[in-house]
Length: 93
Image 1 (cartoon, rainbow, N blue to C red):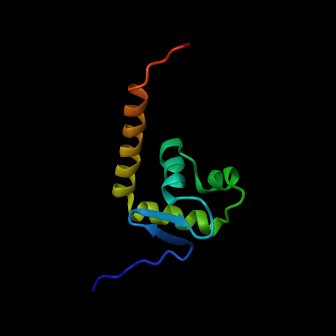
Image 2: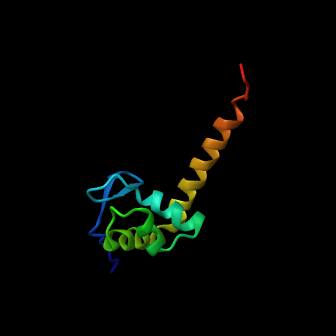
Image 3: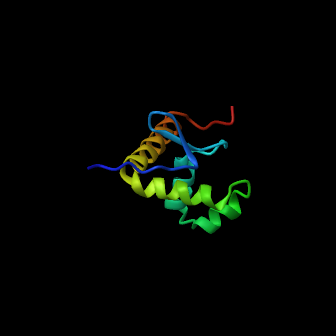
């Protein structure tokens, strides 16, 4: 029998976008800081003093439960940003 995991501090706003309830933070934002910068939960709390420990740990649990799709989204976003930058020529004019 399949079980579903509840994340009491998170809300799904649109398909593929989960936020920390009552905040502006997307789980993908904290996941990127954790994954790409190596920030621990304690560092995330230090960098985002408006978050509570239970919110950060819930976001990290969600990230590890959905790691592959979140990483794919982060990579796609980075690729789109790079493509946008590549199409713009730098000029002093």
